[in-house]
Length: 369
Image 1 (cartoon, helix red, strand yellow):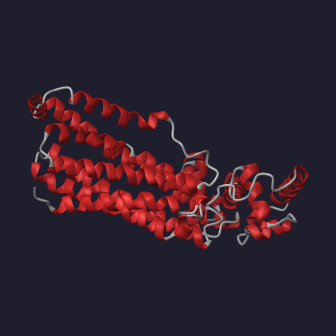
Image 2 (cartoon, helix red, strand yellow; image 1 turned 60 degrees about the vertical axis):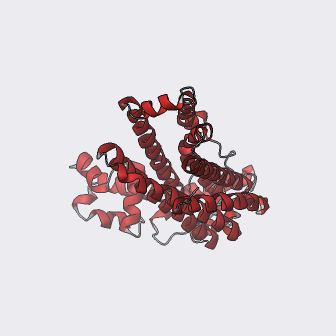
Image 3 (cartoon, rainbow, N blue to C red; image 1 turned 90 degrees about the vertical axis):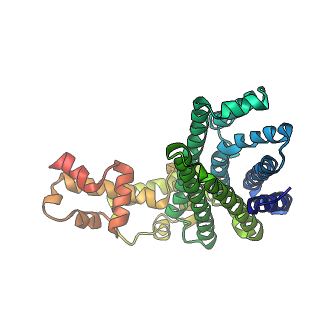
């Protein structure tokens, strides 16, 4: 029995995976849900590596053929990593559990591999060279990488929520954002290797692409265990999720909430305080006679918005009101935006597109040309 470099990588992955699974059980329980999901991810990776080693090294059919079942897990990493992002960022997320539909692809693949075990080894090899099985494997792999990319994009949207949050300047928020960005980069690299392998194998019919699949497994092993190691050795990140609400729900009494809401309405509608480009959460909190934490809680729990989302929405409304009055014929779009309270072109464009689902120039051209 000879061992290749890939075998050594997989074996090292199995050992390190077992170590990390046990080690993560001793990390602080403040982020228990996220740690559980990470443990499952590393456990699945370890299971796959063990299956691949059996597939490469053991030629006995009753061992290597069941080892193919490990491929059923390829559809699970996307949903699990997305769940991990949600559990890590949103402290009060309801268990971060995804619905059943996210696991249907894995169940279908499991059913296919179970069916393949019902035929003899000779029949299995014959089927492997048929066009039908080739199409099945192509659909399996292509849908696998497509789903991984889809969940990567969904996870990226979660990272953006950190960047747009009023907590983005906090040290632990910046660390968490960088950590999650690192995971996203790793997922993009794995997806790229996988797509290249699919292209060479099924489109270009270049079967030497085995080296590409080796890169997929090597990069997956390296990536997952760096994530696990980073989580274990940097507990300040794994222990400090950003709470979407930031404060518990009963922070303010009902009468206090109503008082602050009345003051906010007056400041927004009568004094147009949003037009002040230097307005901050702290300044607005002082205006309504409360703390920044109290105001942040109220905006999140009552209005369902962050401070910046709340204020920029009124700035966009003010911008549109000025455009309706024909201001865009007298000055530039950026000039109107600045008059409405925005202090940068990028912030204005981002806020406008988020609310109106269009760019300012196109919107004006469509509706006020």
